[in-house]
Image (cartoon, rainbow, N blue to C red; front, side, top):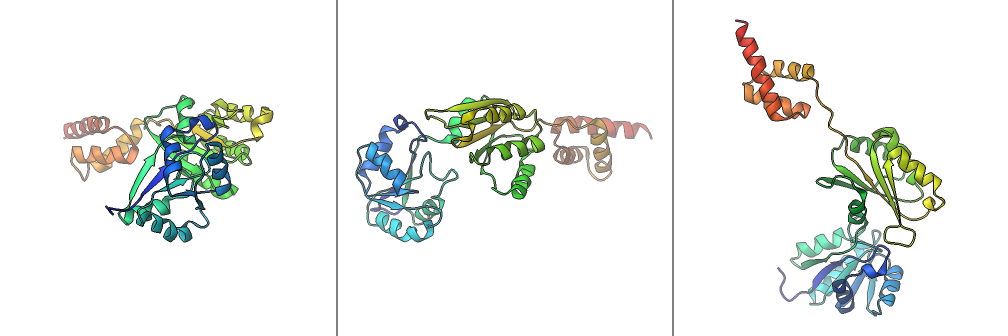
Length: 285
């Protein structure tokens, strides 16, 4: 660790309701020597509302590489820097990872100041399984690459979280229905923590109907939370065919493990069936 250097604080800011700012975040933003902001205009308004006057420097996806030397120099001179995005936790579909990676590579201290995130806020009210989540950020804007990406995600068992622009929410929901099925459970959360916060729930088809029917549905940013794909049971004939081939080359345990990986079945289920097939084969002689 680079002793004598400053700390890069990764600071979460409110996604809507200003009261969600943490006491620590307010203190850090007031105390650092520099605030590296995705948009200095938006962060400037936030600091003004918090009664904070501090030096700011823009650091967004188009200039992050160019800003690195200046920000790193501030840190290496012993001064602290706060990295903030327009709203929520930096690096979640926001710029900043290059700065964090560069600071860590130089042995500088990088410290989180946790708080708001549209991801965790939406998941917390979705009522869908949270034991395994897959965050895919923003989908491609163009139709063809968006469809290709959704095809990759359609079979995932994890609960899926996406960010989407209000301008594409209808098209994205229609693509989801076409590729995931209209009965897949989902939630579309709009304007979280703000005055017009709305959470649409149901099947994907029902969510689309609710969004289309709501006059306010065409305003605000969306976070989508979608149930994972249901496990498709493997038929006994399919498992038998795989095991019969594998047993010709492998022992029972190895054949069962290979079949389980190939077909996505439980190892003990494959092993039990492999034993039955081997015993049946032995009794034929």
